[in-house]
Structures are given as C-alpha cells and as structure tokens.
Image (tube, rainbow, N blue to C red; front, side):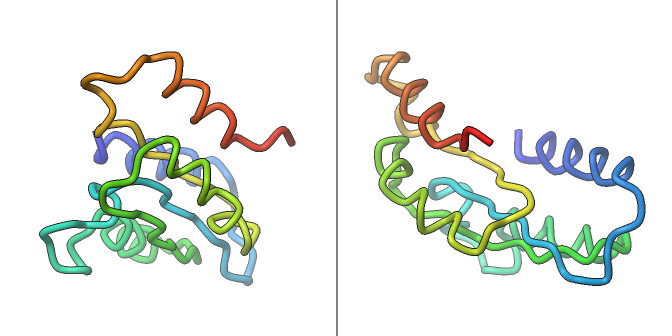
Length: 118
C-alpha cells in the first residue's frame, strides 16, 4: 500500500511541472507504519520517499509525522501540529490499528475531520 501511495505521489509531481527553487514540504502523517517502528530511520517510508523525490530532481522535504500506536482519534488531536509548517502535500495513513473492532463510521469521521476545507 505504501508503495502505491509513493508511486501516486511521484505521478502527481511528474505532471506538476517545474519545481520552484524553494524547498516544498510533504508531511507523512500516520501511525507506526509511517513512523517506521522496527526499522532504521532511513528505511521508513517517509525517508525512502524523500530519497526518491530527490533522486528524481524534486526539491521536497518529507516530514515524518508518524506516531507509533496512533489512531484516527489521536491523529485528529495532532492535526494542527502536523499542519503548522503549511505543507504543500499531506499523506494521511491512519486507521490500520482500528481495522479490527472499531466502527467504520468513527474512523471515517475522524479522518474526514482532519482534511482542511480549503
């Protein structure tokens, strides 16, 4: 799944045209899968995404905003922190922990509340 997200992001960037000289920001906002629990920091998917973007010539900094054990409710409490640097792109990867035993409607409401209206 993470590979598909990274591939989709690279496809979007390919059509975005020339990247401005200023570094742009991507926030990878998620749970332990995003945080990279159990792997070296350079092996987390946000670090791998940044390396790939740089290799492809894109001036993006990927911020790892993953928190091990986080849920969509926890993400809702952290969303202001994740958006404080006004990122250009936000990848939301929450809900895996809640896949068992949580009402789908609660998960959906928490994630949809995290999305900015503009």
